[in-house]
Image (cartoon, rainbow, N blue to C red; front, side, top):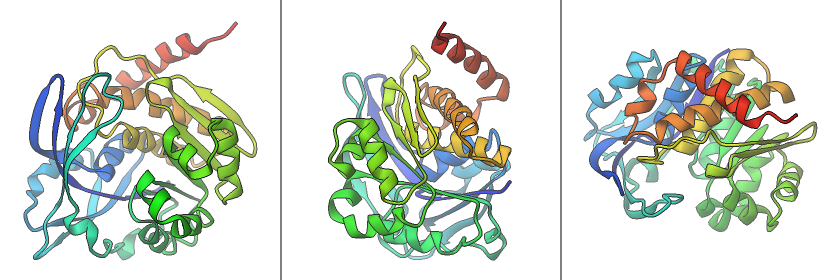
Amino acid sequence: MSLLVTGSIAIDSVETPHGRVDGVLGGSSVYFSLAASLFSEVRLVGVVGEDFDMDLLEPLREKRIDTRGVEVRPGSKTFRWQGKYTGAMNEAETLDVELNVLAEHGAEIPPDFADTDYVFLANTHPSLQRGFARQFPNAKLIVCDTMNLWIQNEPDELRRILSAIHGLVLNDAEARLLTGQNNLVVAGLEILKMGPRFAVIKKGEHGSLLVSHDDLFVLPAYPTQKTIDPTGCGDTFAGAMMGYLAAKGSHDPDTLRSAMARGSVVSSFVIESFSVEALASVTIDDIEQRLKQLQAIARFE
């Protein structure tokens, strides 16, 4: 089934203990799209400024990602982010951010995309997410991401979008901040009271947790030994998960579990390089090999 993502397209500069890159392709929708394209056709909706080099999107075109929804806005500049990772690289330190087009109105949904079945609203202002969600009244599944900025500063708008979607993806710190609950299972159940049918809580190197009305599932992360740059890891997890759900045309508990396993495995590749280099070269055979290893690691009795 069709899958659409709306979110940021960025120009990143990143420094880690393994080196530094400047002016590379980034953004939530970019990482999501590349991961999702391993399983499903993807429609990308986003906006860049007139300063953006469209050749940067070549890795997406090679994956046959539909970029007709990418708007080049005259007179505007592209979203830029500069970050640094140190130590265990569990969290980035933002050194500089230029919102540019992200501080303007959202991108337009092409009319040809209105029949999309599966929709992911990557992290942005919740009022913009709600505006996008309203354009897909017949979607079978709408899932969104959020962050601490909106949880703290836009709680009312966030509650409105949570009441209008089917699933929420967020990390453990965000789940605790949103609900006021330290226990992540309790936090997940509190999120369900806000509207979503399921919540996927990402725990970084400690895996992920699914809480729904029908299921409770804990998944370990794939234990990669090579961590170069964690940028985009969470978006990659969500992309692989949603791509698999769209490919199966289902989001029942068993399919959600399998989709999260793909998210864990595909996100283990993206951290092995700067920007999207490793992610853009992943194959289904690569994924299947790591899936088998993950199943062996997680086997019990």
